Length: 371
Image (cartoon, rainbow, N blue to C red):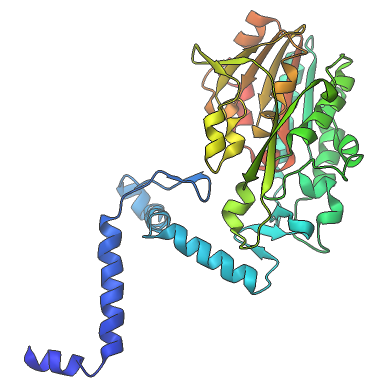
């Protein structure tokens, strides 16, 4: 044993790295397990339940790797260090985010599989055909690369908004598609998309809302009737991935209204303003993404909204113009929609998705299930 230690002393670097590696491994074993990463704004992998079938199908080991990667000690610090080094090296993308001009960041798309989108169009058509007596509309919102084209650098791997909107326009039944792209392009010199987040701003959502209400043939409250409240230092979903060291923070805005949203029979303010103190400030709109919620408005008519998070900052505009607003997030639905439609006799049914979500969403199949 003495000879072993004597020989090891000749290699101090080996000893140093062994101590560091083993120390990190031991510390990693006893580090607390988190369920959510505020830095990345996503749920972290949970420790998988063992099964022989998954092991033999080579499905268990990848889940272990995902868990280990998500819970590596001081993970957030490593993410920040990597992102800073990538930015300082002058790279035009990092961790699935493409850098555009003037601080804009976009979701990276290298190759695109349109098969799920085509299925989703089929699901919507089936829904429309099942409810021919209803006013069914589909607002497919373009994401920033499809509108702020001057902010996209040449040959950047970003989403092909033109193809997605074109396919939807050609294939969704009864011309139900509401294309708000041209309405948004008229305002590209304004702050209609966040630089560090994948959502449109509250101003961008208004221009989408204005175009939608015109398509529905309804009167609406113009934006000059509202007071806009600005919240600085918003760093969105793209920043959570790219963590660029010289980022220019966004300003999140919302219209100042008084309205309650009812979730699980509990009424609360439509804005969860406590979220303004955390990284994911956008979650303040409609108190996140409830599976089912209702809002009593001050206008006329009932509207059913089947949506992704792009709808969240648009819904407050609807309070002044609709009597009732019923919100559905299909990720959390386990019962049929036909019952709601029969019971509430909606004047309008609106699908509201953005192009990126619609491209890969696997929950729209539920609009025709459980009935």
